[in-house]
Amino acid sequence: MATFQKILACVDFSDYSPEVLDYSLTLAKMFKAKIVAFNVINKRDVDAVATASRYYPHMVSVNQFLEKAREERTAKMHTMLEEMDGAELIDVEIAIEAGVPFEVILQAVDKHRIDLVVLANKGRGDLARTLLGSNAEKVFRHCPVPVLNVRNPKRFGRKI
Image (cartoon, rainbow, N blue to C red):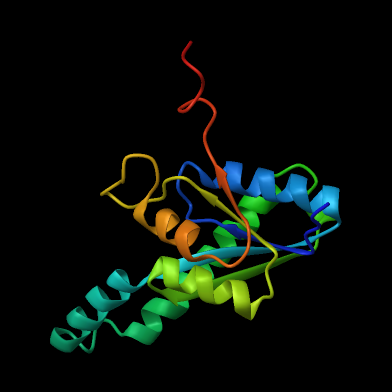
């Protein structure tokens, strides 16, 4: 039987994020595993700030943007975890990184020595693939560890 010691819960703060955390917590309880609650600050947002800072250096900087984004996202992650039943019983580390989402997720698997990745089938991107978001699809194709795809049961329920 497979066992998981460390689970990467990919939280993008979309409508699917509560399901990702719920499944991750359930599995962590079953396997007595640790969770890395993980979020990515998208590179395209960082690039937009970098462009703006060239024209308005006194108003915005990339470092300030990243620092503020990390603080806000960490606080939001804490709030989400506080709202989850049993989260206080699980060892949870919060990690916020910046970059291309699928690349940073794959790097996190090695960096945090992850045994299982839990992510939603679609994230926040506006251009969705038919079944999976483009980042989720790339993680599925290239991830060296098992990936659990979480779906919203109300949106993807059986229609028989």
